[in-house]
Amino acid sequence: MSVIAYSDTIAGSLEELFDLTQDYARRPAWDPFPDSYEFHDGALAPAPGVELTVRARNGYSMRVKYVSYVRPRAAAIEMVSGPWFIRRFAGTWSFMAESANTTRVTFKYNVAAGPKWLSPVLQPLLNRSLSRHIKRRVIALKAYAESAAMVRVPNKTMEPTR
Image (cartoon, rainbow, N blue to C red; front, side):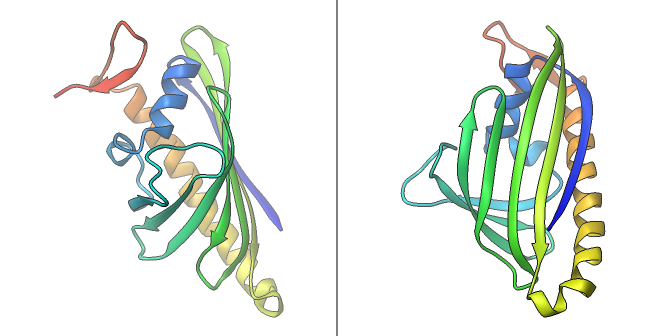
């Protein structure tokens, strides 16, 4: 099992950034990894126990379940099913206010390559790939949240300008 993490300080309040990352209607505007999302069993938003399928731009899909959702501090998921080369996967996105208008955002993944007999070869490749993806996601979140395209509205949510 490997731990892969990337963290950065982003301009925006704790609530703004947490809500932006958990809003699946707005996520395609900033997140470079997924191609699509599909919530299951009638769910429309994240909450503990909610499952969704994430289809990556590379064509692979993973069904995940929210195991924790503590607005505005953290959201955590674990893999229910996924590509053959991932035996176990869990991820946490955490948010810590550094000031009223800046937040430390950390994306952390725990991943085990599989099948076990092939993991000595697969794990380094998977680590390298996920390290690139996690860094790109945080950098893209930062660029989007801090861009001129974002406007802060009175109720302290972030909305893209049209």
